Image (cartoon, rainbow, N blue to C red; front, side, top):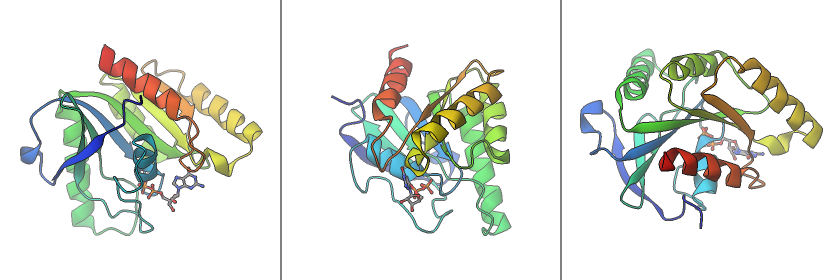
Amino acid sequence: MSIFQNARFYTTVNHLKDLPPTRAEIAFVGRSNAGKSSAINTLCNRTRLAFVSKTPGRTQHINFFELGDACFLVDLPGYGYAEVPEAIRTHWVELLGRYLQTRQSLIGLLLIMDIRHPLRELDWKMVEFFGATGRPLHILLSKADKLSRQEQMKTLAAVKRELSAYPSVSVQLFSSLKKQGTEEVEKVVGHWLAT
Ligand code: GDP
């Protein structure tokens, strides 16, 4: 059975002081519209666990989902959406940055990137910032169904090449639409939880 089965909404947090008691945490992050909510729903085999939005940049808080009583999936606010008031953007950056930097129980980060636009500026910042913590970062090249198999393989190889200087960073193909790559994510996360 998938380790993501039986995920249940636990809480929404807008300030770090309200974070729930610590359990092993796996967090999802990515540019707005990269397909993060869809990836969470697909992995958890649910249609509306995380809210899939046509309006990018809506999620401004941190959502926690529990997997059994030992682990949380954490849905972090998307970044990179231009049409957001400065004050709200500053709040996100602080919430996101401080969570990533200070949360001891965060054992690994899943970074979602649209395969058609991989490694944009803020994605690189995330790789550099989180890569430096030594904790594992696994990238999902999402919406893989938008490219031919040959183009998928080419992009995967190119992204791997660009990230070769970061030993704690790994990459795979993913499509929520086709349920492509779910077993590979389960394997990676299962490994994080076991070590
Ligand atoms: P988020 O802002 O990162 O949470 O992105 P969403 O999950 O809300 O997805 C943004 C848009 O991309 C939506 O219109 C989704 O239907 C679409 N999308 C997400 N995943 C896939 C996928 O695997 N394939 C395709 N073709 N579209 C996807």
